[in-house]
Length: 217
Image (cartoon, rainbow, N blue to C red; front, side, top):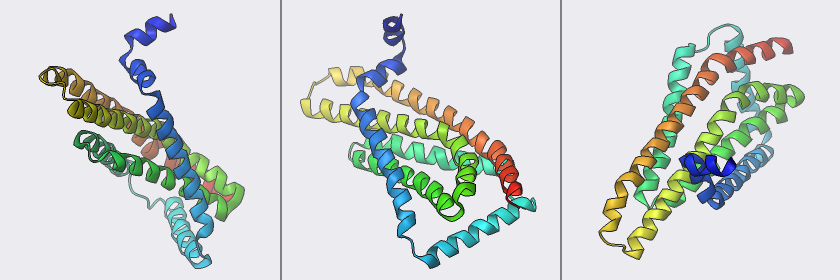
């Protein structure tokens, strides 16, 4: 049964065929998370105070209902994530952008690690709870999408490099159309996942954050 599923599902086939790339990217992302958490401890007291001031201001605005509307939050989140995914996708086609794909994934990990690390560092258990409701809900969906597109883009770029330097001749052009079609389909799939994540970030996370913040008082 498992063999049948893996043989018929192109997504499963892709993951199995590029498992080493996925392992490398996941490791790189986790290193970014760890690095981001370490960076928090390297900040000076003044820098932490400045950041915490803006964070407190954000909490006050949320409690007073002066936050951006959910529709605007959704639009901002969706556009930001789609641009990030699209950039990695384009870098995969460009071939020379392959190292930048890994840099972008590492930086994404740094942002997540820094966000959680700063909240925990400044607010301890309250910060951990706040990060659980503000960072985790959307990122538990967004991160797999970023890892997926990162692996797809890297494998696409590596395959192009192999085809160009091995000089397979006219057969490259024949195989290029289905090859590129799958690449486009994978991007559309990732955008669909990001749409769900942006909806959670815009409509669910603010409500959860407001509930948690009100319990701090």
